[in-house]
Amino acid sequence: MQTIFTITIIIHVLAGIGALISGAMAIILKQNTPKHKPIGRFYFWCMTVIFITGVFLSTAKGLLFLFFISIFTYYATIIAYRSLRLKNLHNGQKLLWIDWLVEILAGITFMGLIMYAMYHFTVNHSSAAVIPLFFGSIGLLGVYRNVSSFIKGPKETMYWLKKHIGNMCGSYIGAITAFVVNQSEHIPVNPVFLWLGPTIILVPVIMVELKKIKSQPLIKVISKA
Image (cartoon, rainbow, N blue to C red):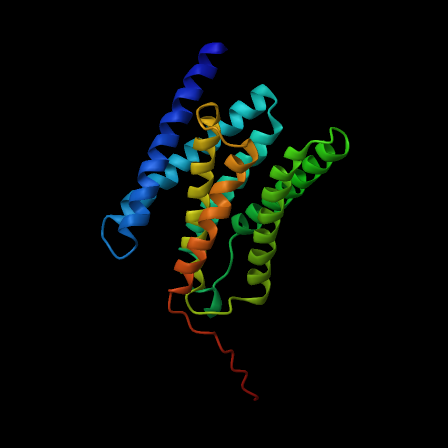
């Protein structure tokens, strides 16, 4: 059994290195270059391997927080991937069952993260409970926005591109966070900052980049018969 754990950890680490490198390359090259798509696809599969191995390790070792975080990071990856296939929601494109299933499972996971945080705060009086509370709240907000767009429809023309870029960058932040947390013994910084720092620092940068995307409001014209 120990051999299986060792092999899984090695695969997990190699996939993590691949994700960090390919994710950076995809961001640098951006979508208007021919190399962006294959590199982005490689990044997606690296994140998929990270998710599968992370869930296995967390389940086998009983690491509930790692289990939650694995789903949190991969949720952003899946949403970014699916956004490229949901470009015509404003033209009546139908959602697949997988889109609803992802949101349901993610919603349950993020509520679990929040309950996990509340438990550690009330029972253990741990200030570190802010970490799962932070990620759980962000994740739940993302689910709310996605479900709302599914029900009400998109509000702008380039909604799919913004969702793709925002969530791919979000999943990359997750990969960076995992890396710096695993190197915490070599970084003389409060662990809470290592968990939350990448998100706090990089999300504003992502927001600035998203505002640069030229997108027009979708105006629904209802004609009377």
